[in-house]
Amino acid sequence: METQLDAPTRSKPIRSESKTSAIAGRQRLIWITFLIPALAIYILFMALPLLGSIRLSFYTGVGIIPKTFVGLANFQALINHPVWSERLANALRNTFVLFLIHMGVQNTLGLLFAVLLTNKIRGRNIYRTIIFLPATLSVLVIGFLWRLILNPQWGALPMLLEAVGLKAWVHPWMGDTRYALIVISLVSSWQWVGLPTMMYLAALLGIPEEYDEAARVDGASSWKTFWLIKFPLLAPIIGIVSVLTFIGNFSAFDIVYAMATARGDPDFSTDIMGSMFYRTGIGGEVLSGHMDAGMGAAIAVVIFVVLLVGVVAWLYFSRRQEYEI
Image (cartoon, rainbow, N blue to C red; front, side, top):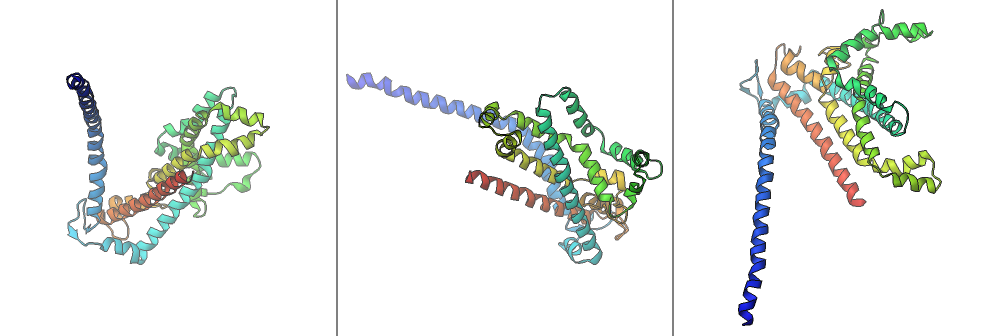
């Protein structure tokens, strides 16, 4: 009798487990269904072009699809050829300078603006719009306007400096190899400062107010509250902003093209990796005398390797810091 009564009771967990597994199977099917379009788009527009660029870097010749297989000769030329290696080193150096100026100016000002916007000041929504507005404009338009503003003969900035008695500061900045890249970096930082501002602002608004109240009770000043409490909590978003800045600068091209042409004038002082790739693979490098898609692809692979190393290093150190915490 006990066995007959216990049998239905024992069968319930079995049916419950099978029902749970069926629900889990349907959930996995739903997840896969939603992932397939994104995965297909990624493979079509990211993975396949990347593999195609790597394959193309092993060829040379005239035209969009070179047919002469040369193996690693393009990479060897980038490293060993006196002109190519000099151009590559110059472009890498300029790109790192561009990145460092963006980190020091754009991201620092973005954090400062975000902290100020968290205060309850009048018109802060207007200030947010003003700060973010340049990021909505075309880079080509921004570059053209700033070339007009910086014109040493009739530009708005030189005229303003002369009006306030600073005529000695007037200089043909875009024609000087010492200042051209710095000017372009500052213009780009001005345009994109709204993006880190909004990211930092969202992170600051997400910090519980109880932390501020506890700090005030302990007698901490506003500076100590920010530096000892809020700033450490912003470390993850600071890392993300830094990586996005790194990726954006190493894939940049348009601001240099708009303000200094694809040659990186004057005298390649503003030439970065993106402009070197365009000039070689699409525009026709002076060294080769024609469009060399194979050499351009080799430069693109170098850019990819630099980005890969930078992102992997950030992931490693960020994960290591999480484990230590």
